[in-house]
Image (cartoon, rainbow, N blue to C red; front, top):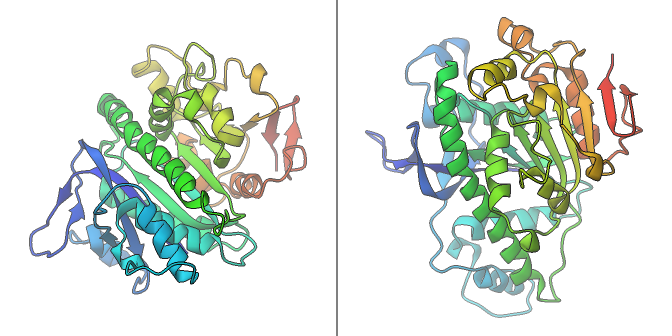
Length: 376
């Protein structure tokens, strides 16, 4: 099990600390850094502890930033792997690796084990998250996807981007700009990963693992994904993703149209795309009428036209599910966090991640060839 953070947040050294940390500041930097979360000494904090002002940063969750690699490319990773297999002699060890080299090396080693499923989930959060909020979200995601025996996910790559810390709708302007900048970091990760695959598996002594990688984007996290897709050239896209789950997406309902030139590239990247929407989503209603010039939102209204992708793209309507897990006012009124608040939505997501045929997933009513409604 491993949880990594990919972030283009500013790197700071907090007062009294001897190691670098990610900042809570609301602006992004051009490059991203990788960190790995440490759960070895983690203890669930008490309610009083959570209310204290010092419940921030590593008091929430310990993490360590990876060093930057001494040179680009993944030849060093290849040398380490071949040395470990006794095929080649090298003085390099895993301790010499940094950044994406170290993360890809660790994931390859873990995903090549004999476990039945050891999938990776790339998660992109929505708006109104500072870094402390992201650390809390990581803990929730670990419980939901890693600790849960019905989930195929064993590893999480959490995409940290500097969204506004305010829930006031006006901050959407800032978040939209930050999400666009952060999409370039995701694009660089994609190109690094495809380069890793080419460098490593050009050697016949190493074989790809049989595990899967998924992407899940919530709310304005879809804007980060969209920014990445804008920049990807079709001829450079490899189908390296199994499932893409678009949750309560705060992007235009036209994103799959060719004129947008963004989400219409997803079928080149992934085996299956699932759009989870809620027609009562208050947050997306606010977004539509205050920040997006009355443009309907994908996660509230559904896509305008996905006929060319009907074999790959599914729409799942979550409007009628109950929030039986989290039923505070925020969740009941917002109807925006079904993946956290509803066991039915979670069950649907788990079956999707396992690759169950979309017509065989439990608690679904089939409305048409690729439109479904979750029912109790």
